[in-house]
Amino acid sequence: MSQSLEETALNQVKRGPNRAIYDKDIALNIIDSSLMCHVGQSKDGQVFVTPTCHWRDGDYLYWHGHSKARNVKGPIDAQEKVCINISQLDGLVMARSAFHHSVNYRSVTLFGVPERVEEKEEKIRQFKIFLDKVSPGRWEALRPVNDQEIKATGVVRIKIDEASVKMRAEPPVDDPADNDWPIWAGVIPANVSWGEMEQDPIQTKPYPEPTPPNAY
Image (cartoon, rainbow, N blue to C red; front, side, top):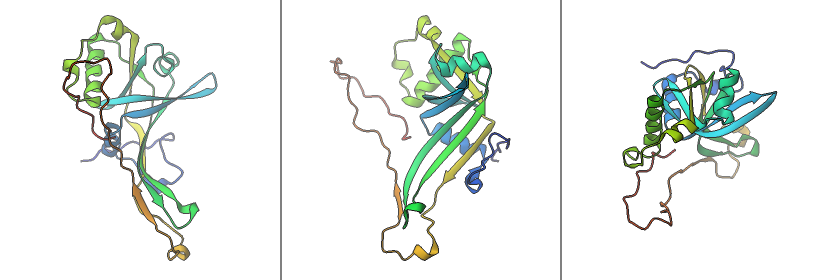
């Protein structure tokens, strides 16, 4: 059975509510199939938005950074909610008028007060989950992380409960009077794929290439 996200004053979609979805499974799918998010926070009356990679473990969304980075340390010190957005572009919607051009997309917006992950072994476990998302199976072949790296890396998380999904997946919606206008209309799908791997120029031995992540 699909889980529902609770609607609150923060996560309720007000502009275009017909495109809003409060289905947790759909939100988790968008989170898992995306590599980057944008973390929005406020400090001294100024809003900052920081792009970063994210991952999920159970009901929590995680991200990392330098232990003193604003998007890792700031919301912990101030105990304030952050706003996180994750978006995927699926296609360009080409209409018969400039006004009705649009995009097909999937987007999830989350709110929460970040919690810091402090325990050493748990941080290492989260590092592995993140690396397995970026390149499945690569963690075991890497040089093990050391204490200095663990200390220098901050890991925070928010619970995935105050969130909403907004998405569009349809052809153009033109004014009826324009339906016979003599121009092509439809959707140009976005084709996002990984390109050819570029080996580090200082590498001299032919090691097996890593496994790329799923297309994001």
